[in-house]
Image (cartoon, rainbow, N blue to C red):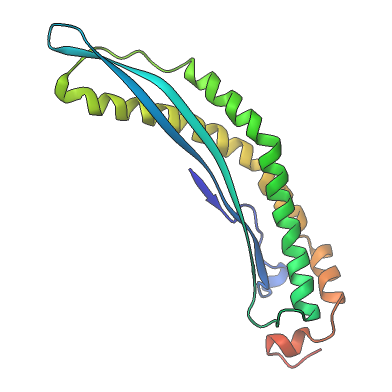
Length: 178
């Protein structure tokens, strides 16, 4: 599962988006299976290992209207860095929890009936889907905290604070008002 740009609100009053700070946050899973022949032409398929990875890849984008080094660019960048800090904190707080959740999920993996040789791949896929869907369900719940944090960062007060820091917003945004 991947979440991109989690929790960003639109600019208050339908204003312009001046930057984006966030990035991709996802869970990845790699599994190893053991397939045991039972002697009657069927096979027992067992998920032997499940390795989960919780990845966050922070990214910041500032509107091209703002020249790097300008007051406006610096203020937008500083605001977007708050989103990056929130994403990093979310990752640190949830990394061990995700690992513990994967261990918990491992204890609930269903035992499947023996399958014929041509059913091995489908059985493995089914077990992978089960584990990934359980991990995704947990991830979606955990992400709700990040969404709330990101929305708090995008408050009207924060936007007013950023707007008050520079004099040439109108000029840079093409409205001619400063």
